[in-house]
Image (cartoon, rainbow, N blue to C red; front, side):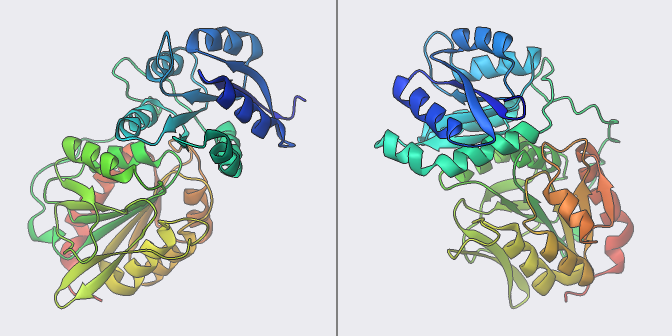
Length: 362
């Protein structure tokens, strides 16, 4: 029993508690050691049962999931998978949970809960497995996660000017990536090169996510729209459930947003975006692989490097899950491995040092 992942389920619905416990106990490598109807009951269970992972509902009586998560991550940080109903408010609350340190989330169906949760069983249990291996950090008073890494040098926000017009920064991320991408983007200058981002995220969340980033960043951030020009000072996020890539149209780059089969089990897939970066942008691309589980994008990132791009991987200590960066490094796809807080300053430094020497598109 000690080798199994120990899970406490927190949900105000007896039906959902029972279903989640059933799904978890069916797995050979995990067990539900407790089920709580609200955070106050959960607090005692956590103290007594010492679980490896918690699944946490967002809206509950006596104390909502966000307040409970905030207290938990300040006082006793541990891996949490949020369970939220797919609504506009639920999306915003889920993004707040990720900001506070939740490892991942599952969208609870609004109708047909029993059948819906059973169909999501494989997804739920896989996220619990990933969460059990995740690196979580204690929240500090201002809700910023402490990474215990050396502080980065302040980013110089002076204009990059024409250095940014020929370049595109490509970012791939999965588990833990919503906050890692935020950390990177908020430290880019307003006239940064265009940024194209594939973050593994289901439909319904990326619009809210992009809006949140847009309110925080100097650059403009939005969901990518098929056929729009890719411009400096803008970041384009792959819509959940669709692939994002870059193409040429005359002298311009354009975003291509398309449906299609999952690649490496993901849609959107980092592999699709990075393959297009190697093919279309070549040595004018900069690649960044952030925290995430699996190997999506590692092979294509090596293709980017072979085409002349400069690539950076997030280091293990600052990752929530060091899967995708580790695979990129193993493929020989990266020139540098850096703590998260140092990636944006390094991109700016590299552009100032090298960008003027490369001006022709491939």
